[in-house]
Length: 572
Ligand code: C2E
Ligand code: MG
Ligand code: MG
Image: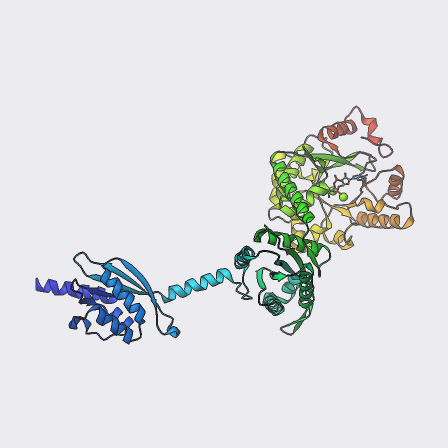
């Protein structure tokens, strides 16, 4: 039995002295019964307290003497031990350079007495402090971050009263992205730090600057007299941030735009930020390197746009969109070769909305991908109802064209509709060709190998780079109707004929868009380089029911003679 007892005591001893906590146990008579090594080490005590049967007071005094706790902490600890209740306190080292935090737990025992556990929580507290700093400050510039700024101005606004006014200045760097892209991110980072430093230097102690992310900074200018004070600061910010920077032996120049919102009674932090942001948007639209104050109309414009976005989302779900079709006429045969699908939106209150108003918004919203998918499938299915000789042309936005699975989108639309690939034409614009040329080239080639045709829309409105015609696998060029303006004078006509001949020589079909008069038609068809024509002269874009009638009339057997009515007369 004795041996067993000794073994048990040994195990108990091992457990006690290997635990991460310091432990000290007092019996009912107030004398210390157990004290582990960890406790002795943490408190820097001698190891004979148990043998001496020391009291809690003796031990606390010794802890104070060794410099492990303060006298005040010792009082608290004694109080906790004597109270015989569960308790928990945190003490910090009396020597502030040591920065140690200890967590003490007091647990009363059933037969009287107390167990005291001590845990060193220094690292945990440091980590918590670091995390909370990270959560409130920008790591790169050490400026307060968005969350911090939002809280701080919320607090400042709540304190403001009477005729004290303040201004919130939303600062955005111009051309920062170019610097980042050309000189690399480390240089971009240094530049942001330099900007932060300049902003800090310019402000009074009561003003407040934060980094909002990316190249956006926000300044809260407190207690000013008028708009003019805010305008003056904005002007100084634009000027100062536009001065040259020296970054790693590079001389760097950027610009800045500022949007300003003035505080007003009842306007909270979030609204103020939103207003300044709207003003910034306007400042940028006004040509950058400038500042702009928020005005109420801006909120109305933004609100109108927001409602338009909501309506557009609903429209897609509710199938409020419709496709109209406009024929392209082959000038040799006089027959309709292709019909272009053109988006229409029948809104209950807005009436029919033009794609010119829809497409850019849908592009901004990212809705264009879903909308484009719908258009593509719908157009392919419609084409299945037309005579076999007639193709369908579908407009693709750059975003849609650059989505990763554009190929499978197209393949899927062909599959579900059953449309042969050679009856689908995809119209893209030059802006689709501009980015990531290698990838674009691949996509075009793959579409081509599917059998789909690619046509370059609106040629003559953008860069009109002839190298596109040469470098990309395109089958058709559509010359924009703006080419027809002043076509009766020599120059545009020479140009148009030149482009048409070049394209024809490169093996492409050439379409001229926007033909409205017989004179225009005669002029463009004179030398035979233009293969197709499209315009109101032949037909306006019409609903699907109507296009079917038109196609049946022009391709049907009985009306064979009518095939050659165009180009001299409208078919619609
Ligand atoms: P676009 O692709 O160049 O389409 C030709 C535009 O010119 C159409 O305008 C058409 O109605 C108009 N047009 C045709 N003939 C004449 C004419 O003789 N005279 C005049 N003044 N105009 C003529 P619409 O339907 O308003 O479309 C405008 C643009 O919106 C399109 O230009 C295209 O860029 C875009 N768009 C239309 N539908 C879609 C679509 O489904 N997807 C995408 N991504 N864009 C579309
Ligand atoms: Mg088009
Ligand atoms: Mg066009």
